[in-house]
Image (cartoon, rainbow, N blue to C red; front, side, top):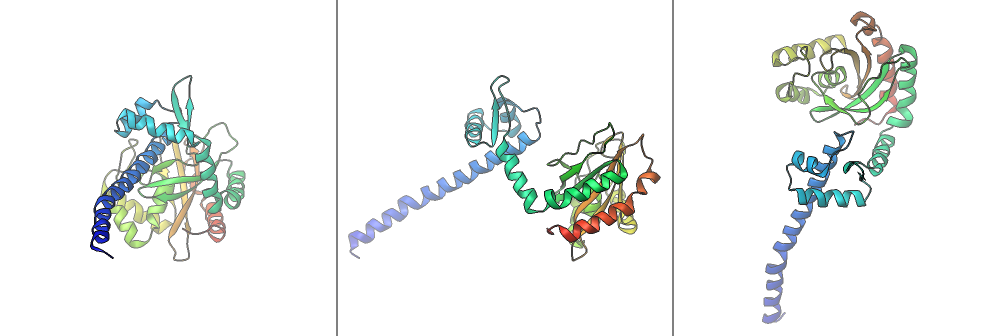
Length: 275
C-alpha cells in the first residue's frame, strides 16, 4: 500500500466511523422511543391523541408525531381520523398471538382454563412474571353477569394480586429475596400491603400453605386465590387463579377451589414450555 493509499484509508476511518456509530445509536434510540409509545398506547384502551402521548412520553411533539406516523404506516398503530386518536394496531395483536402460540398459552392452556371455569363458575386467569409486574396471558370469564377486568396483555401488581404473590413466593430463592427487597409496594386499595416486613410475612405464609389469596387488596369488591405452576427446578414460571366478586364467595368458599387449581396447574406445568 502506498503512502497516499494509507493516508486515504486513515481519512476514511477517521471520517466514517464516528458518524456510523452515531447514526446507529440514533436509530437504536428512536426504536426505543417508538417501542415506548406502543407501551403507552397499551395503557389507553380508548386511544390517545398525539399531544397526549407526547406529554406522557416526555418527547417533543414533532418526534412523537413522526414516530406515530411510521408505526401507523406499518400497522402497529391505528389512527382514528374522526377523534384524532391513536390505538394499538392489529399488527401488535398478530405478534401477540404468535407469542401466545409459541408458549402454548392458546392451544394448550385454554382448554384447561375453560374446564376450571366450567367447574367453578368463575373467572380463571393464567399469569407469568414480567419484571416487577405480572402479565395476564390467558383468561376465561365465568358465565355469571360479572366480568373480571384482567384481560390478556394486562400488566398488574405483584404485591397486591394473588397471581403476583404466588409468583413472588415460589420464585427462585435469590430472585425472591431481590423482589422482597426491591418490589414497589403501592397502595391500590385500603387493604394493600405496603409495609415490607408485613409483605415478607405474607410471602412466607404463602410458601407454607401453597397458595396465595387476594382479598380486596388490588381492587375493591374482588378477591382471588392463586397457585403456582412449577418448573423442573421447583420454581414458579406461571400462576393460575380463580377470581370472584366478594358478594359471591367468602374466603373459605374461595379457598375450597385450591385443590382444583393445583390439579390444573400440575397439568399445565407438564404441557407448557417452561420459561
